[in-house]
Amino acid sequence: MLEQLLQLDSELFLYLNNLGSENWDNVWLAITNKFSSIPLYLILLYLIYKKFGWRALVLMVFVIAGMIAFTDQMTNLFKDTFQRPRPCRAESIMDLTRFIAPRCGKYGFFSGHSSNSMSTAIFAGLLLRPYFKNLIYVLIVWSLVVAYSRIYVGVHYPLDVVCGLTFGVFSGFIFYKLTLYLLKRFISE
Image 1 (cartoon, rainbow, N blue to C red):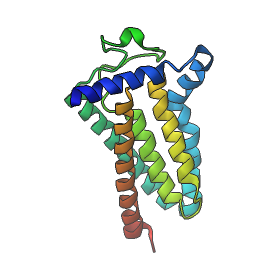
Image 2: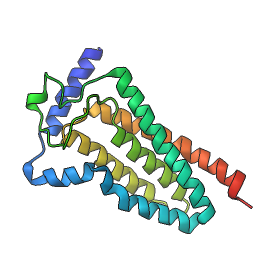
Image 3: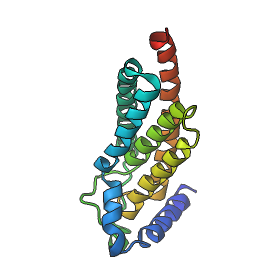
């Protein structure tokens, strides 16, 4: 059963990865670059400041740093535990892969880009939902695009991405709840 799932995952990866074309490679490389999301993060921090104030912003910067550290470390733990080679390193399919990423890490299960982007989307979307009710949907679409970029550039299987997104939902929600508790405990007057 597991072998069949992994085989389907490889086939879906090859299909999605090979949809790419040289005309779009630079766009997807920009999307997958972790620094390309900095303007979005700055806008989200500004919105948090405008709606919650300086004290809450400082608190939330620490919570967000904790959330990103948590998702990164859990991603690394899963990668080191499962040791599933990335598609760009898997001998069975690496010759069939459109690998355009600047580098190829060793293990890929699960995707850190996917978990970090989705945790940010859920956290910020829920936090700002009373003020911007549709923002969460925009952020989720952004996260899905970032997640797909990992398949496009050849460094993650679809299952890596889906599991990363799922973990990101969980992490974002937990840290959102933690923030509500901390705001009520330390910031509310």
